Length: 333
View 1: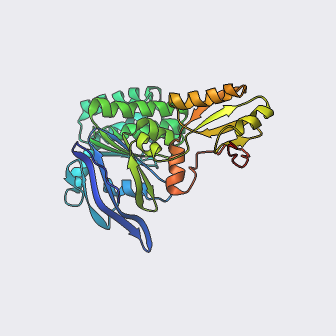
View 2: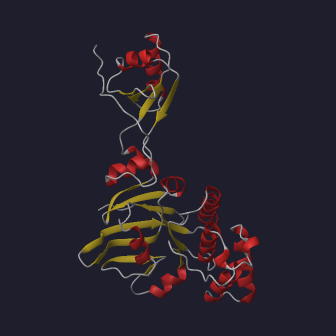
View 3: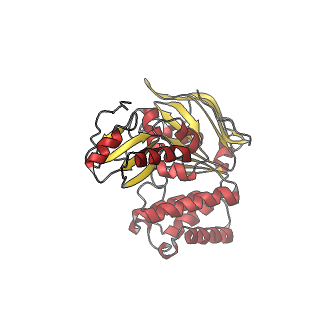
């Protein structure tokens, strides 16, 4: 069982969190700690237990076992205090389709007892922040999917929550809208000290936003750390050299140990990282053999590789590049 070490007071602390539905174990006693003022990303395949974790921590579903504190409040004994301190954006919309965008925000302001003047000010502020001012008086049912998703997140922020749960908040958004959401998340953490637990299917999103990342698989936390720490756990860094002449590719393959050739793209993959001595050795070896390379690039493991190695499954958003590698060639010398 893996736990996070953090020097700051946890905004979320869960120990031994467990949940089952009949004979199906969804969460198998996980420990989870999210430091105040940070973004924590929870990754995992479909059915790994990510949404169930969010539902339990946000008081929507009861746990079978475990001790949980959110924003300093015991989840079981102080559920109302937890609800006052959090905001939740789930995978499904929580808006009234017959109301306008502004009316939905005003309704949420009323639920938070903000008062008439403050509620209007907060609604207009959020409409502007999410680039929804032009849609303020349009019924939600007429809004595009992007605009609805942004409005859903805006409604989460009406009450100035200290802890926010974002369950795949940018699913279905175009790249521009996704960047707007990313900027808002960064601002909430950097300027307002908000703590965020994020589940996402976009590994780049976790890489860009998260201070720490946990990988959940079959109800267990199988790894946790910063993006850089997780990537360093996975072997596979290599230098890719491309040639314009098949003969040069064949000769180069005999010069390096444990290489993989791709005859279609005329590329040679050499195990190694991006440090200067390694790159210099590769270039000097090619130069001594009078072999000219068309290009040289360095490839290091990314979160896709981490996901595959830890869960045994390729990430659903990743399309593997087609290749037909030849058997490794060994240096005959």
